[in-house]
Image (tube, rainbow, N blue to C red; front, side, top):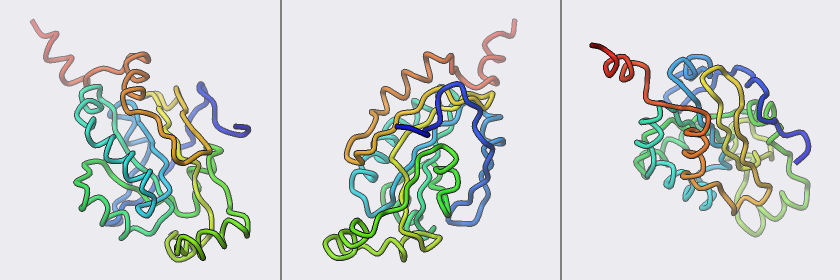
Length: 192
């Protein structure tokens, strides 16, 4: 897809908020290790929900590699908070209001009038009400792996929102880039 961020590109720093209005800074998260960013359309999308559940099933595997999982959505915070509680998600669901982060990755688009009508009239979804900024726009569903130095190492994006990257593939990417257990565990193992 043209315009999508490529591996080897630095991630533009961002700060987003969760439903409790707590800030999450990419810079602070990267201090812990690699960052896995999942772009999701929202809690109304069954494919997105299934993807988040699949990630949750592997959350311990991501943590074992020192990686932090975050999911970004344009929808208003209460909807994401409800989804997180209902599905028992352990990772933060952050509000990408205006899709600023998704746009910086080249992974956002405004819906044309015919698509707006389809969502509204057929699916009974008012994205203007659902999205935090009131716009009819969505992210391209994607998974982005960023190493601890803030360099994008892998992008898996598909304009077909029904197709997602298996979390096992993302874990393999983390292993391939040398993600390892958090430094505190390494120090404990190397002491005499």
